[in-house]
Image 1 (cartoon, rainbow, N blue to C red):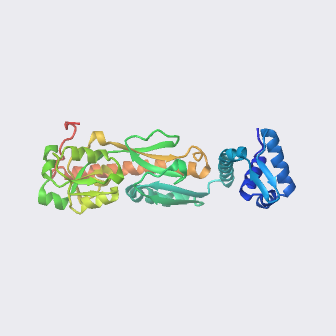
Image 2: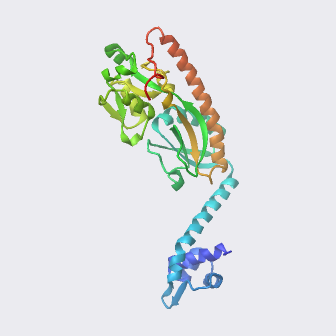
Image 3: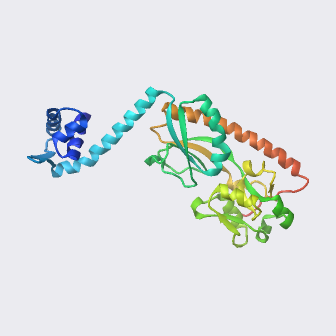
Length: 320
């Protein structure tokens, strides 16, 4: 087993070009650096540097060892950061990524109560419909809504399920009416999504039953899709927790069973037990789950009030 301090000396000499430069970078004397290099070379059984009057130059074998030594360095830094986090307790910064719709309707309203419980944790939001690479450090946590998560080394905890249905604005319904069946979708203006969002199963279902009619427009985020529907551009597929509680929107269809999705909070394995990450997950999961249940009940009450005006068409018998 190699001494990590010997590896640090190896990297410092390789980067600085001499034991003198390495000693300044490490804050130790030059003799200590030279002794550590000799110790590492003895343990390895081969030379890492060629020494000369102008400094130390890596041997061919030394060049081959650099990438592995840097990998050990990165692991040691992660280890130190986790240890520091444990000592700090529930404090520090978090970078959370999610899409605009989830951020505005779920996360941001929850940040106030979370800050009251944990005032020393700073949460920075990275709002994008692109799925950021958590494993490469683009964010610490993500809230993702999807039918299933891809296989990875990330740790996920379920928040809640989401139903999807088709909606239009009240203005659109008064001008164009609403479809009485999925076959009538071909007679309406439909709002698709852009390729940036990947597949949205409810939108895919809608366009599959459109009879080949092209969409009137496309939106590149769930937030813009909601606004496009509210602006009376056409019929769009939205989460029921959004559409059912908005008095400007009309439910056109029953729930699209094959488009049901789940929200998850996801993080890297090495972060899951740090106090600030654990505190955030343990607070957000029940808080957001309760929020969704409350919104769903409000939605059911509003739908019941509209039942004598508009009857959503059935989707379960639609060809899959």
